Image (tube, rainbow, N blue to C red; front, side, top):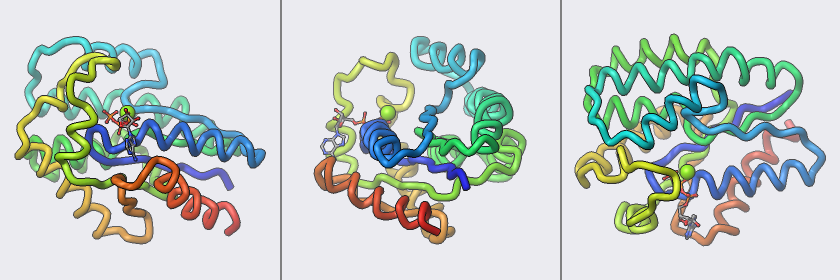
Length: 207
Ligand SMILES: Nc1ncnc2c1ncn2[C@@H]1O[C@H](COP(=O)(O)OP(=O)(O)OP(=O)(O)O)[C@@H](O)[C@H]1O
Ligand SMILES: [Mg+2]
């Protein structure tokens, strides 16, 4: 059975690094893998990603919620569902839990609104496993200082209080559904973090 594996966590926790390592490892083991990042992966998703990253224009939290949800709605229906149906493992760099953490806990939107947007966008597609990369903010935010390689700094430059709420939000989600989430200590070096993730994924592959 094809797996949907999502990577969550704050800025600079190592999500993209670990998606890339897991893709390589799974491919070496003979699996077909599709890595995706949110927002992105469709024409409208890529357009919204570019806009969100390049424009420093502030948005109301409600608009932000709906733009991320719109990108996800398209990705789930046109890319993720067909890929899973064809036996391809899908690795996602952020998914609906990021919306709950950033727009719900971070921006403090009513949780009922966040749930509704996530329900519409996700169309019932729930990850088989979600990897939470967690580390102290002084370490992870330090990794993103001055970084402009991927465009703007819509969230990176938010207050420390915002990042604290996001981090606590992710941990709360993980503790609420421990069967889906695996919390990984993102302070460890890159290879050790990958080993922890591989162990979890291997367990699912051999089910
Ligand atoms: N375990 C680690 N130890 C030290 N440095 C790391 C570790 N993991 C990643 N890094 C480095 O930290 C930086 C951020 O990593 P990465 O881009 O993978 O994080 P990210 O979670 O994808 O960030 P963003 O949310 O901004 O996309 C990179 O320079 C990466 O090489
Ligand atoms: Mg990244």
